Image 1 (spheres, one colour):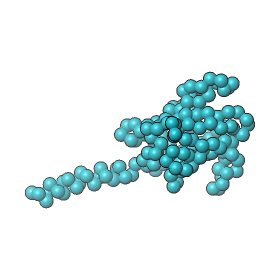
Image 2 (cartoon, rainbow, N blue to C red; image 1 turned 45 degrees about the horizontal axis):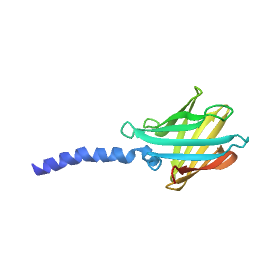
Image 3 (cartoon, helix red, strand yellow; image 1 turned 60 degrees about the vertical axis):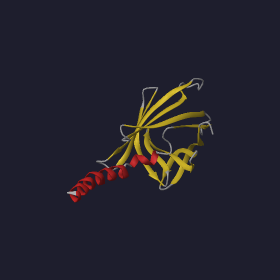
Image 4 (cartoon, one colour; image 1 turned 60 degrees about the horizontal axis):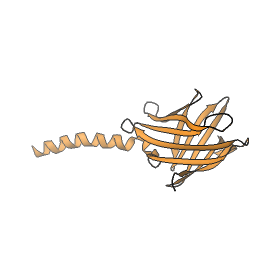
Amino acid sequence: MIEIKKCWFLMVLIPLLGVGQNNQLLDFENLVNKTWIAEGEWSNGSKFKQEVSYTFNLNKSIVVADSKGYINKEQTEYGNRNHGIRQYNSVEDKIEFWEFDVFGGVTKGTVQIKDRNIWYQYKYGDATVTDCWEYMDDSKYKFTVGSYINDKWEAIYLQTVFKLKNE
């Protein structure tokens, strides 16, 4: 009887452990329940200022990103700018993301995580754009936005550092 109970326990426990280990979104864990801030300048001279807070939701099946930034073209008003979702698509075996902005737009793309670096790729007009959160340490990420082709930056539109708020 004890052996049957042990087997039953293992039959229930092992699949649960496997689900937790396969959660591709756990690579976001260093960003979650924290707020990250960055300032810089786009290559066209306009200002960049952003504050992003990440949380897990739905039993860690999605990552939610809430961003503050400039909410007008004149860059004089700062407020809630984007609401983003990252989700692992198990059918296609990839992480997808959606960013909804205050202007009514939505950006859709994919996410790849390599060596603690987070790579977003998406269409912006006719161009394919890449954002990279390059891990520096637990409280800093080098943030680059540009055209990344064949494992190299062809053009960089923005480069700055996201730092943990209050550090």
